[in-house]
Length: 432
Ligand SMILES: [Zn+2]
Image 1 (cartoon, rainbow, N blue to C red):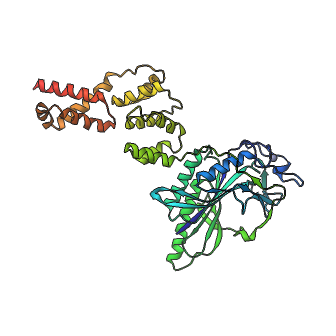
Image 2: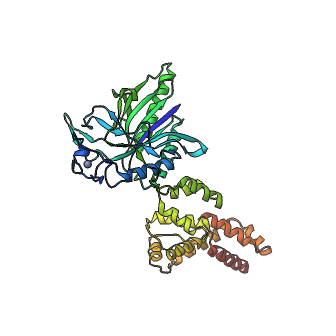
Image 3: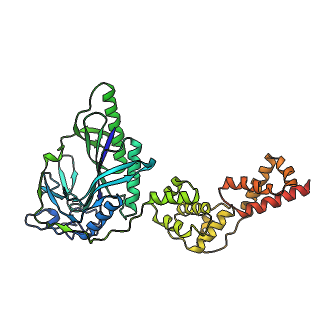
């Protein structure tokens, strides 16, 4: 099975790619427009440098080679969302090429190229009419093209997850529309599914198509080379009549834009959360998956871990991060974090009231119920394992073992538990 992707990501620039119109999403149609992004004859584009900086950063994150000089072409075709009859895009001199993205299991997906292009307008289809909204027209996109290296639905999911996590750390809002073309071939011929919106639909479209081609092959038939579309309502792919290959488009050089030397353009600091999770996992023998879940889409969590890893026990710190997420604390200062970790290490349950006290730097009041809950756990364990008491008389170190068993249930390192265990064991010996 061979799966390749072309993913279009909208760049978080303030203005459009070739004009000064705002990219701010707005309900009212045709507000953020001007003659350039409406494609009026005679209007001249000028390149937005911010888009280049972000595109270059994406190419770098995807381990691409980056060109010092880039140029643009006109991809000529007629469609209502493109009144000037061509889209400004890149062909030979794309900003990045020959990259690679490592997904899980040390598998690598090759990135053929990363290129910059403009988004066309949005078509709003009515029952027997169509409307055009040019707010979107000219928004900068980066197209990421992979080699057909993805070999299963799981690998596709991993690829998308990894890409999303990397883009998150470049400040790219993953909830903004992502549009993709997907090519899948289980047989000899390549089937392309065009214009899939969002990542959930992308995975569903792939699943349907893998299933459809498998059924054909099982019947002794060969899937034909064609372009299909994904129907979100029926959740199926259907044959469509779009152009199939680049040869069917006309490309000419864009005469209104010169060749740009971008060698001195900066690159935004790139962070790879997957690598970070692996490093932390190796250092603290802690599950890389759990760390990744905490930091993949949470810059705040990563900063907190990196800043405090030497101060606290790593288990306690990770548990604190989980609580911070659970109670949606956007900011936590050093004092609050220290109190939270003390609570966790004391084996106490964290609830809404605890968090309120922690944020105000107040000492957390534990009701007797909470402390007695730990006592109950210790007593219960000793009741269930009566030999413990006899052995404790001979060997006081056994308290560590009992406390350890209790701590396992709370997944923490509470000094409190050990203290209470010793007290309870001693009082039980005295009673006997
Ligand atoms: Zn404009």
